[in-house]
Image 1 (cartoon, rainbow, N blue to C red):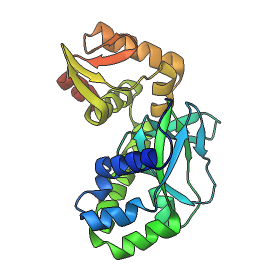
Image 2: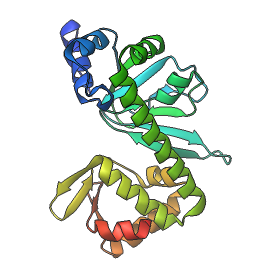
Image 3: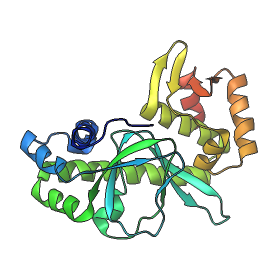
Image 4: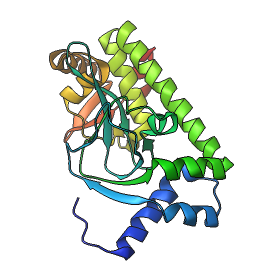
Length: 238
């Protein structure tokens, strides 16, 4: 991603676009949005850039404008586990910022990305000042914590094929688009990415994806996963 626009006009465009697409800001009035917009900052990151690391001070709340960000953690064996993928319009770092404890994981750009960020003191002030924003943030954090709990439970208890099926169903709901013959997951995921997201080896991920292809449940086109049989995938994830 290479932005050619610079200066105040670009800053205004990208911050207002971030406000418009971020679910946490829905329901706020024009004056509230203008006040928030005045304290947003812009950050551009290249693919594989580390945005923050586990244990860092929670100085900023982030919202993805463009691109994708993964939240990762190292397992006891030293393997990287992808806990979640943050898509445009979604925030990350929120729990640490609200609670005031260090970031509990690592945030890494999966592709060239544009972010907007809010300093922790400003964000906490907005939560006190705007009840609608507080309600939205609590809803989003609650849903995020529940998803994280379910992901960790699945890693511990379910078979690999069930974990991968559940992951693909979740990603189809989050980043899916309709294409001829099924639903495309609008993320470029490698077999290693999938392995890290479900806590398995790359070899097992490859075998499992091949099995799903042979069963006619998924296919891959130009590196994009297409779900051809969503009900069948949901049955495997149950």
